Length: 337
Image 1: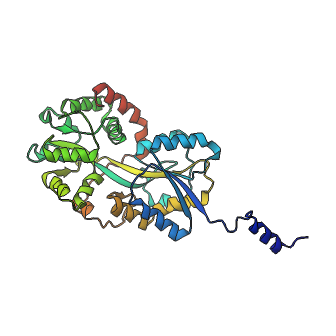
Image 2: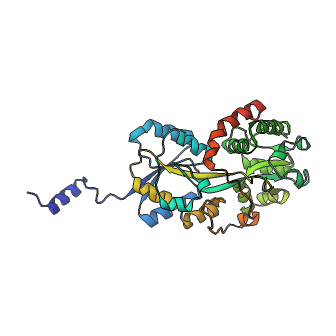
Image 3: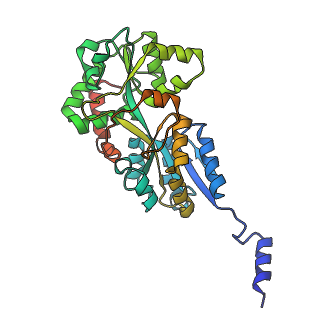
């Protein structure tokens, strides 16, 4: 009979033992920020778990997960925007994660049954004070008023950021009011929707339009930039936290969930819990100008601190998915493309 020690030595020699295999975690990420490299690196330093990451567009990654099926090596799916996370959940690719840590740290309105938010960004209004008055742009609803005809710039209405805003407005104001609003936005366009959120901010500074909608982290990125041209843009515009007297400023998220066929479940849960740690939450704020999802985490970011506190919409983020498709139909009828 071969002794256990001898058998283990033989298995090790021919590579059939798992004893020397380092723990791994396979991540499919549609979140494309170079600053996240440190986030992943810190997790590996703390846990010894090696991260293998594939980055691509969301649709490509979702199709890959579906094609791989039960043989998928992916443990975690990460993306931005609640509607995208909800879409992934509807495809049945996630599995529930039971974690007292996550339930305690992530507020209930920032998590769904099968995924968790880890950072937030606000959909702010940016305006040129030489072209419009501050009191004209204190709410999303005001952007559709005739007084702003020829003044509004946005990116495409079919972009998830704008669809999520539309979905939230349906929840708060109803479909009929939201369709009237969308038609008013289209009537007030300074030009056809194009570009990203940073392009909208630059257009406002250049006087191409008087007001625009943009995600807060794009604005904060310009504020923190050392480039003279970026500082020149910020000097010409102002930011507004919309709807402070009503339902609050619409927020969106970055989030993640564990995949249905995750081969490394223990490592996956550790990673999801790590993203909710003070260290990781602070990194979201400092690395990409986003707010932590975990309350009470101190933010050391000059731009975010200068922007100050605001009343955020507390609509459960998972509920946005229920009206995203309706928002798209409303936008289509209004010609908001």
